[in-house]
Image 1: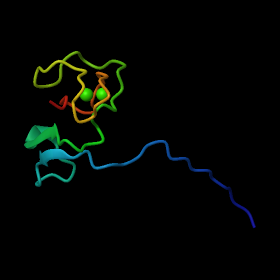
Image 2: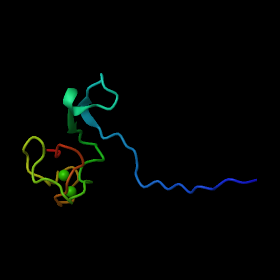
Image 3: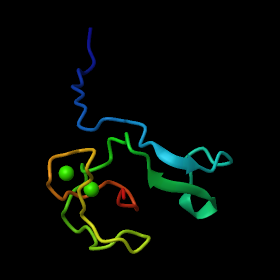
Image 4: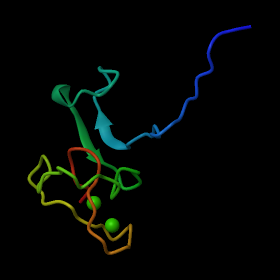
Length: 86
Ligand SMILES: [Ca+2]
Ligand SMILES: [Ca+2]
């Protein structure tokens, strides 16, 4: 026998971000070609973003981070993606 043994570790989870809509003409939903990349209320991207190097406003000019009543923790946290859920 021979060969090598590789150990794989998964450090990221692939989830559906629950965009409002993405352009069905593109497989990855290129934001430059259409679609609505705001997050739906059940998105796991809400309040799970990384604060490092995050801008003070989202792409629509809304201040971030914000908290939403649905999460109910009262802590302002960044959302992943271009839009802060409102
Ligand atoms: Ca947030
Ligand atoms: Ca929160």
